[in-house]
Amino acid sequence: MSDFRLPQQYDVVMCLFSSIGYLKTVDRVLRAFVCFRQHLLQGGLVVVEPWLDSQRLSRNVGTTDDVCVTAFRSAGLQADYDPKGLTNRGLYIAHIT
Image (cartoon, rainbow, N blue to C red):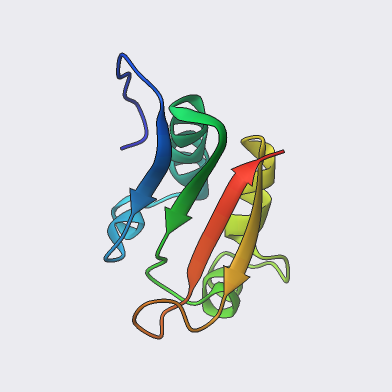
């Protein structure tokens, strides 16, 4: 998920059911977001359902910043966080900056 190349771009790139949690480091999450960005059409959306809510994830890696929002920004994406999301775990919705 953090290193792939597909021959086309998409309107929506989705990573649901906490699949992002299989990436065990913030660096791998960032690399995944870069891949998502590379496969996104201008005006498209990236949707990620996290494995931990934003506050717990940030505490686990020792920061007060939202780790995912920071990783999205570093990948060239602007993300908003919905704390409820689809299953009460939250949902990140990002677009190209």
